[in-house]
Amino acid sequence: EIQREVFIKQIQIAIDLKRQGINRPLFLHERDAHEDFVKILDEHKDCLPNIVVHCFTGSQQEALKYLDMGFYLGITGYISKMKPENGSLMQLFQEKKFPLDRLSK
Image 1 (cartoon, rainbow, N blue to C red):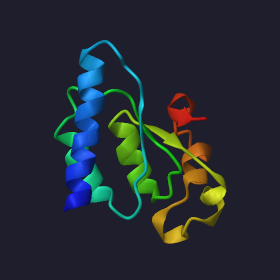
Image 2: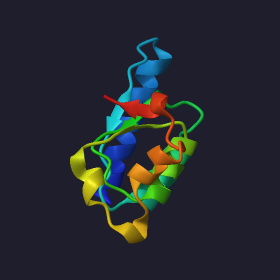
Image 3: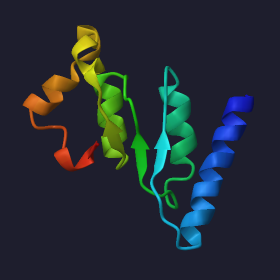
Image 4: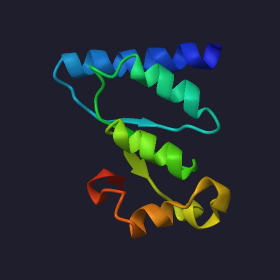
């Protein structure tokens, strides 16, 4: 619960900065908390700065959800280790479902 509270406070700081004209991307790391992550960010969706989910290690479905929410994804060599039952991020690239402008450096 403490982690959720601190996460919400971090989001609020980014929103406050954006309102002050300091619009910087919010770099976030999510590990095994996709549903909570989406729920919390969705509650603030109308005022968020750009979101970068760095070091993404989730499933293909999770990647598609983040992309649908307008987030950028940071991809590492981990994509070659993804579980086939979760779908491969490489498959998203091959099927051109991963827009290259949403790829974080």
